[in-house]
Length: 282
Ligand code: GUN
Image (cartoon, rainbow, N blue to C red):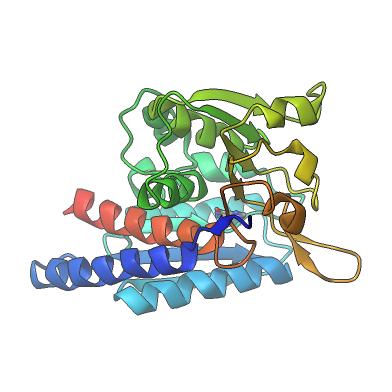
């Protein structure tokens, strides 16, 4: 039987509808959420993501200000801009689109963002607060995954959760959030022995490696919930996830697609973080 497809696009729309009302009410109180978006260089995927994020902001009444900097921008120039935005009372939250050009140290850039304006929840202060269960902001993709599970009444407590990928953006914070919901969490990575066997244990499998269709149908336990965070281009320019969708959807109970799955949820959480930042700043 084919798995149920979890609709991230519809849930993101519901979240945006709620945020739109909240933003209207905040504006009456004199609080105007505004997201500064910084993009450095000409990465075409980053340009598409930034455009999506700006359109989302407009849709819910959040102002956005784009700073598009040339590829040759120095690290110090970028950090100076961030310091200026940190001080600007008109800016609620700051997002620096990653990846940055190779000559810029991403850690130093992320560390320079005021933690109270950290739209992505990348700053170590916010990662630390998340780790101890006292977050101000949520990591966008992992929290989007959790909201998608909640909306579809998929319980995490007591379940075997396997996260494939250990990035700071997705894998690690995803493990923390599943643990906070009392999942029994395993994190796999490129050095994991017998990836297939470990994945097969999963009641909930989150694939976030960035390798096209690395998770085969045979890796899936019958009836598992499969969340595909991957967005990969194949050599023939096809968009595929980290999961072999057609095979996996025959075995899983629920699954996400590459488009209309996790992506819109990531962006919905970004908007939530921006509104939260504006409220925290009063
Ligand atoms: N690049 C890939 N994913 C993300 C994300 O969630 N936020 C930012 N800022 N850059 C990214």
